[in-house]
Length: 79
Image 1 (cartoon, one colour):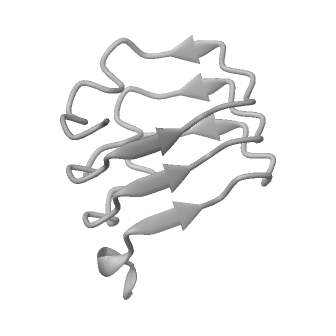
Image 2: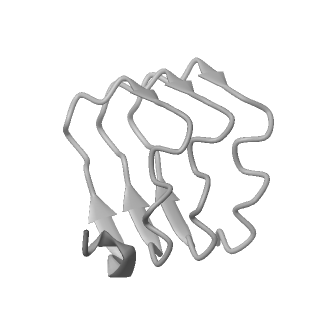
């Protein structure tokens, strides 16, 4: 409740390991998502569903190992 208007989400340094399908589905207004300095190794194919306005996605300093081939397919506004 109330997150549909959120435009910036910084969840860096949270030891996140995986991004599951539809993790951010209700964050339709999100423009900036900072996931830096986590332990993300796996991103499922629909992890970023619903982020149609996303312009900035930060994934630096993670342990990325497996990223599904269509993860970024609908993120047309990424800069």
